[in-house]
Picture 1 (cartoon, rainbow, N blue to C red):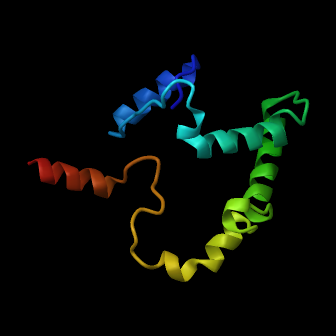
Picture 2 (picture 1 turned 120 degrees about the vertical axis):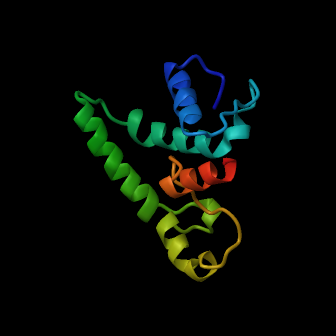
Length: 122
């Protein structure tokens, strides 16, 4: 999380603590320590928030859903060799089946994980 004055930062920190997720701040003036989020936020801001004049929250949700669909399914990403994330995943399914570390994780720890942790502590 950056060190900005946003109110959401405190809410996010409390959520992380409640879900036993270590909360870390990036160093002030070092946005590249959080480069993936910074890149996504910039792309979303340029493609949706700065592009439309919204009258309602539903309009924001509708345009955001359209943008996310395009971003994940059709838009080429340089970091993925010019493929969309969905195309990249399909092209690399065989490799994804191999256990090679953490590839993705749910935002909230699963019940199974919580039970294992509880058993380990007892």
